[in-house]
Amino acid sequence: MTSSRAPGPAPAASDSALHRALQIVRRTLWSVAFFSFFINLLALTSSLYMLQVYDRVLASRSLPTLLYLTLFAAGCLATLALLEVVRSRLLVRMGVRFDAQLSGLVFRRTLQGGRTAQPLRDLDQLRNFFAGPTTLSLLDAPWMPVYIGLVYLLHPWLGHVALAGGVLLLGLGLWNERATRRPLTEAGQEMSASAQFAELSGRNAEVVQAMGMVPALSRVWRLRHDYALGLQGLASDEAANVAGVAKAFRLFLQVAILAVGAWLVILQQSTAGVMIASSIVMGRALAPLESAIGGWRGFLGAREAYRRLSQDLQAVADERPAMPLPRPTGELVFDGVSAGPPEARHFTVQGLQFRVAPGVCLGITGPSAAGKSTLARLAMGVWRPGVGVVRLDGVDIAAWRREDVGPALGYLPQDIELFPGTVASNIARFGEPDPEQVVEAARLAGAHAMILTLPQGYDTPIGPAGANLSGGQRQRIGLARAFYGQPALVVLDEPTSNLDAEGEAAVRQAMEALKAAGRTVVVIAHRPALLAGTDQLMVVVDGRIASLGPTAEVMPAITRRVMAQPEGRDLGALGVAHG
Ligand SMILES: Nc1ncnc2c1ncn2[C@@H]1O[C@H](COP(=O)(O)OP(=O)(O)OP(=O)(O)O)[C@@H](O)[C@H]1O
Ligand SMILES: [Mg+2]
Image (tube, rainbow, N blue to C red; front, side, top):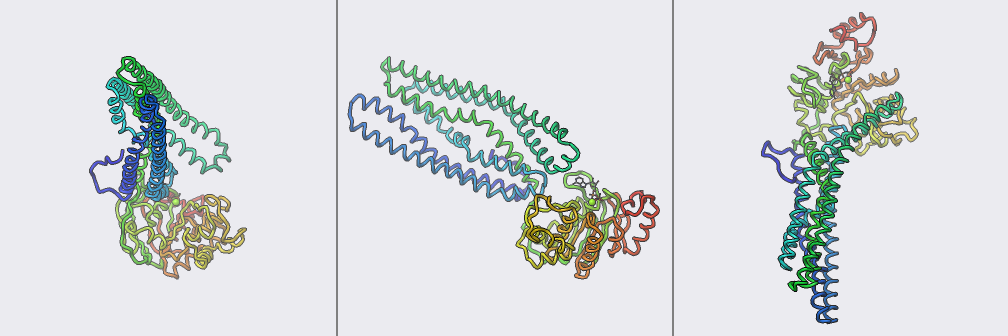
């Protein structure tokens, strides 16, 4: 399961990271196999000791021989213990390095995909498997032929018994694999789907509580969960059957080999020592097979986790080793852009062509689902255009390294989520907060006074997703975060949706201040009062630019149209006017 990539296009950075991580695993497993060699040799101590005691000491009645043999055996076993310790330490460190190689990337993937923590769980599962007991027993498996050969050396007939036993156990293992693979794989998929469902429902806990959706959601969840459990049960039953048969069979093999041994002793072709030693050696030979049968479920789970993980990592936007560019001045150009959500096949905005110069404020309005937020995401480089290019200072925004361009961008999304941390670190985007800049951004956003009324001011901790703040407070802090660090391009998606008149006035002032400082500002809004403060106004309808021009010209035309609407004074009604 390590390296079977089909030849194809050059691997993305993420792909090679998984590759590198697996290389670490492979390299460590080689050293572990090396240690396993000596561990396996030393594990023969007790059987050899028994052979010597039975056949030599008891026959010769020599106490010194017994003493030396015992001391030698004790020394061997102490070495064995030491090697076991080293081996498991190697495995633990391998797990840590494997994790270190991938966890950053996987975490980023989780942030980009923005759905659930499944990739992180997959990574955990994979790491635990690699460092776990099944891997060890699989590493012991190559020793099987050696052990069986050893039994043959003791006596050919004993060897036949051990070999036949090994072949039959192998057959049981294959039966296990065939019978459990499909249901276990499916059960794993269903399990992770139901875990994701629970995770996502948990995020909407308030809605769920308020509208009494708990029973209905539980029902949906139960259904999926039960189905997964059913499949798992099916597979486990089958696996238990095989494991039971395998265990009984292996115990019976011990009886069989002792019986054959005793028979040989009676025929005087062998000794009691050989009889007992062969039974121990055969036990060791077959143990990896038995534990592989027992641990097969872990193996299948890990394989599934690996499949999901490599798929997920393929989807990670490959990090370009782009040349660092000077800080942008904020000129925004949409050059024939058509685009849609990352996973959709259709475009939700089409043929967008416009330019916003630094120091200019562009207002965007239009009916719901017209594509305004899509445009904002494109301007921020969050989504990539399917056709055309979005340029910042003449450079394709996708070509900028995020770390370079991010600080020069200010984005207030329509749904504001804050992160667990203090108000100050949220405003400072979790970088090292510069107190002066934090306060400056908060003042610009009209949030400073509000923040000072919080229990610990700027050091007030914010709960998950900003749960302990009001909608307006969240929006003000979100604005301050967008303004932090004097960004060259600021995109505000409905910045006043939760604000009172005072907050709206603050946003208008901020727009003026940003313009005066030569920043590029894009504001998506419905309210005429806010849009009146823009220089250019764009009306988006059905994913296309319906009109674009100086606000002084576009505004009167659309207000006339909107005023003609019975419902009134919201520019969102434009779609009706256009349609
Ligand atoms: N994450 C997404 N996944 C799939 N489709 C999406 C996603 N976001 C938006 N869309 C679709 O894209 C279209 C444009 O949505 P967008 O959010 O840009 O509208 P909008 O103009 O911002 O509307 P509103 O005024 O309601 O915020 C809609 O048809 C919507 O269904
Ligand atoms: Mg929107």
